[in-house]
Image (cartoon, rainbow, N blue to C red; front, side):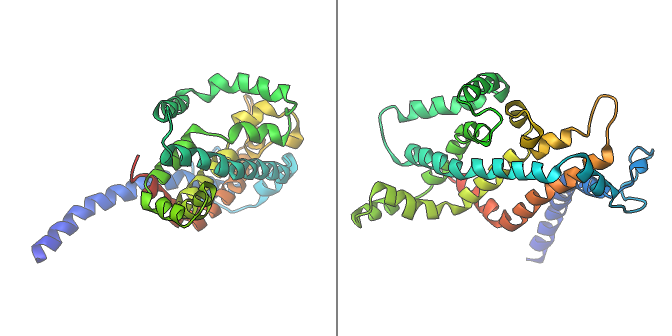
Length: 278
């Protein structure tokens, strides 16, 4: 028994060291951004670079407020993120539920066609999407930002996997109790996949919050810029304001970091639930 425990410990040591190394590769760049936000500007380009600030300063945070309207940009990103994720939860969950729980003619073929759209890069469809949004009069508006990003083949696939993993006995018992189809969906099925919905919420908000290309394409005024667009102003061909850029990145990452910290338990459960069945 002791030999088995010793062997198990010896096997776990290299595995844990490898995991620590992999985690460090992810954590170190984020830590670099956070610490660099407090470095004085002259120390940004010093060689060799220093990981820890030689002295801590808040000048970068003061300057970023004067250079760009960061509060407005973060507000726009918040509207964009929440305005996208709330209707996306309804639309994509309904589609995923239909593909997972209903048998209808052409279901598999339609689902394959739906998934095939995931292989089309956004850069291919962004011009037609821009033309449609512009013709509808949504250019440089929140609706123009939000509406094209609601439906997603990836989220339908993601939620279909979650609904597919649930036992059929749940809906059969609900039908015997007299629930309608929407009652089964809303009162029985949705509560069973809350971790998956939380996972989708986190990833969707994070994707919209950090989205650069679509807001850059569909907005034209400083009033409608998102935080990602605003931070791009600090880097240019001839000069870059690294102190301001790091301070802006720090402020931009902080809400997403807090969101993940509070929802990480559901995030892990959601990943497990969607991986049970395909």
